[in-house]
Image (cartoon, rainbow, N blue to C red; front, top):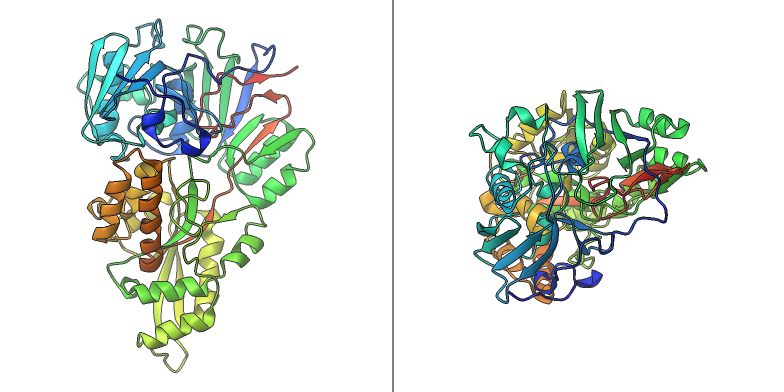
Amino acid sequence: MKTMKRLSAASWLTLAALAGMSAGAGLAAADEPKRGGTLVMSVQNTPRHLNPAVQSGIATGEPGTQLFASPLRYDDGWNPQPYLARSWAVSDDGLSVTLNLVKGATFHDGAPITSADVAFSVETVKANHPFKSMFAPVQTVETPDAHTAVLKLTQPHPALMLAMSSQLLPIIPKHIYGDGQDPKTHPRNAENVVGSGPFKLVEFKRDQHIILERYDDFFIEGRPYLDRIVMRIIKDGSARAIALDNGSAHVSGFELSPRDLLRLKKNPDLNVSGQGYAAIGSIVWLAFNTKDGMTADKRVRQAIAYAVDRKFLLRAIMLGTAQAAKTGIHPGSPFYDAGVNGYDLDLERANAILDAAGYARDADGIRFPLTVDFGWETVKPYAEYLKPQLKKIGIDVTVRASADFPSWAKRISNHDFDMTMDNVFNWGDPVIGVHRTYAADNIKKGVIWSNTQQYANPRVDELMQLAGSTYDLGARKKHYAEFQRILAEDLPIYWLYAAPYHTVANAKVANPPNSIWGTCSPLDRVYLKD
């Protein structure tokens, strides 16, 4: 095995350049941290359960990263850092990655954390997690001894290190979950959880709170600093803002309401930071059904894109807090291509496209009707904006709300839509969170946040395979540049903006999370000042 040197921030995705690093590198806490105290944290949704190995999303991720440790963690510069793995090494051919585990680490029931648990966790995630590409190239995980796990790959996998961090690879106990029960519905996912992270579960009351307390035998000596974390489930954004304003909540992540952010920034007792969340990579977009109905014609999709005034939406609705996104790759990614056609407002061109395509207006000036769906309140204004705006090019839009998120997800995943507003995450590397939206083999009826657009382009599939199977950063950038140019022409989605996630923290909170994973990071370094 060959240990390579550490990545720079500019080349963080080149796995072959990653080095094994000494435990604790880059993780030094602020001087003289104070132990003790209870951190009150507001979270936005009730998770289905608390096991990130079989469930994606931030509702599970925020508590899940406190309950379960991953092999690696990341700093705010896209640099991998040791966590359960004190060091690692990559073979010269990139087909073998060795993790050297911390010795003496235990689960919350006192059982030792071994390489067998790492192998079991990888297998569980690979078989059950919705992000199938994360560990698809992992053929086996060898365990030559209790503290060494060797991941054997069928091809180079540049997203592997990110996939072994945060909520994406929680190390779960084989002696609990290896009992033959379905891990997706295992009773220990929500009650009597046995984790590997800095905090252990005290109580999970749905729609009320999640209470965690320090695990005294955590493998990083002296951490965590906090005695407890009380995660209050506050679904209403205004209520969360009030709790932050009056100090009844100390911290809240993933906040993006422009009015709340601007108001909270005026409170001298609060720190409002947009740092972090780059790996989450959230993009708000308008998705099209590319197989059925009028939106199957890409000329219709292009005309709609030219009719939408993205700059107006960013100014009027997002109040200048958000950044435009021209492609499905987040603007914070080194692979983002800002040079593609962004479809700036051009009503004359939009009408010309539809005229040339033969979509004539009737006596009322209407060419054809379309529906636009939305599944939650924060994207409702964009859906409603489309009705008067698209009427300018002869499209009669019906805005269709769903009773709740599951109803929307069922409708969209079963391809019963023309257009829908959506908010989808990149999850750090395009292999993990971008490919799933455009891969032809990921058109899976009934599965939300797969390729629900039913988009298929063989060259796009080929480019994703090429970019996802090399550690050469230059080659990856080249492949993804062509990938984005093709998508900008085919336009299965009209991308609007990168969601401006922020962490709002009381000034008494020291070391609030600012890594690329935001508040889906371990909070072992956080403490409360006097």
